Length: 218
Figure 1 (cartoon, one colour):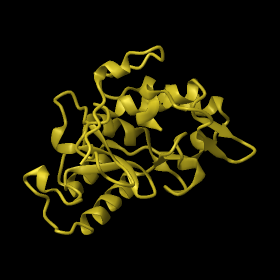
Figure 2 (cartoon, rainbow, N blue to C red; figure 1 turned 180 degrees about the horizontal axis):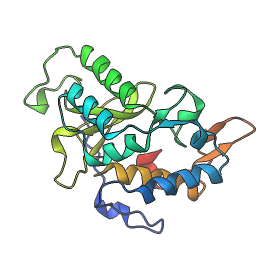
Figure 3 (cartoon, rainbow, N blue to C red; figure 1 turned 120 degrees about the vertical axis):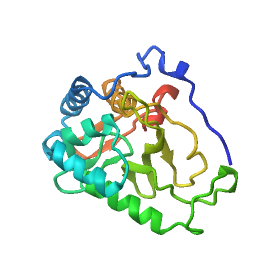
Figure 4 (cartoon, rainbow, N blue to C red; figure 1 turned 135 degrees about the vertical axis):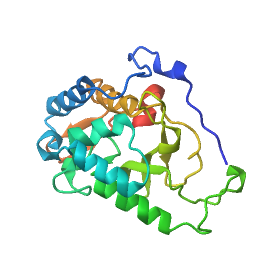
């Protein structure tokens, strides 16, 4: 299987890309919301209320794994889109659609049910396309998703982000080190005009070639 690895040097560019060492902050979320509003996108007005700490704890108990701090901030901000993952208001600004934590857990369960053979191998060289129990999808598009590896959550609350492509050949490669990187990458893509909302067409477009440092978010 191919191995595509993104160097942290990629994040230091003319676009100001860098790795965010801190857990996702309110300022990161405000930046993304401001980018949506500047495009006239329906997303800010389509989001569901965030989850309480008690609700997050209940979902973590159902999951059987701790929720990383950055995802507690993410779903505590807004719990997906009010009209669900398939609605226009759930689209982030490029490929991806937001999920509520309930939708994320349901998609995880569905992907686990598709495992054949059912057990995740100890040796990744023996991997045959199984979904790992410690992987949690966060945003989705058709068969693809961005997911976090809960087993690799750092002490600071960041969990590495991976991509499951239509052809999942790089699931073991870290796409970016934290969900803050994803949120700020989306914001940068919108701010620099690489992800644009067309009110007349009622959809997001990627009108030109996306620079390499922003490709993980497209």
